Image 1 (cartoon, helix red, strand yellow):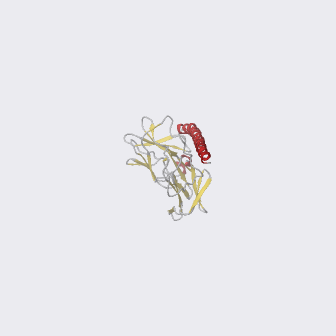
Image 2 (cartoon, helix red, strand yellow; image 1 turned 45 degrees about the vertical axis):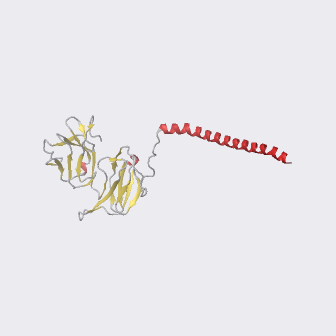
Image 3 (tube, one colour; image 1 turned 60 degrees about the vertical axis):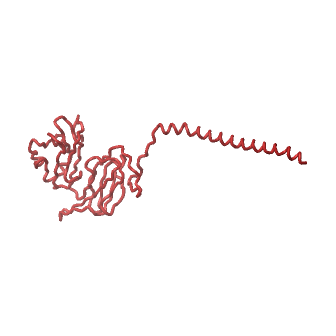
Length: 263
């Protein structure tokens, strides 16, 4: 789902609490736009193409939630609240959109709400809620998946991806044996930051990171210069050997008359 057509990105973010893109049913969600001036908080629900809004100038619609100072609060979330949320100014500038997924299940994945910068560390957590007791935990052994394929199993219920690459972007989910599986959430990785080498070792879960490219002019210079250097070395070796051979020959020739005279 697209946030809005003809929407330019502005320097603000949609702040949500709790800071995760997946929510349990009946949780409360607080949303606000971190920007000065007039803004409008909008959403586009997966089951409804109509865009409703909650702004600083009006009360939150009753089917949305309620206004609390500068925040809009949805007291009880339902799967019907699943959708795309974003901030928009009167001039049509928008924040990055946030995908919110509300599930009736017992397991959710905690993943970054907003795009992450290439080279940073990202921690994913698998949460379980016991509907009988109302308690939640994130320390149970869990399997983590990317694009449907198992990455690894973590006994602590959380997985850290060191030095994320753009190739780490994708759909993630987790599974807790006998308790349930979370929905999928998209993780977006942006930027061209080349991470520094990790001296402590590489625990990157991806099968392979991107190849670090060599500038074209370096390749061209190497392709041209290396053969020339090689030829010059060969010539130098050849003439050095020839010089030594001639020098040895001259020594022998100079020594021969002396030997004849002594006889």
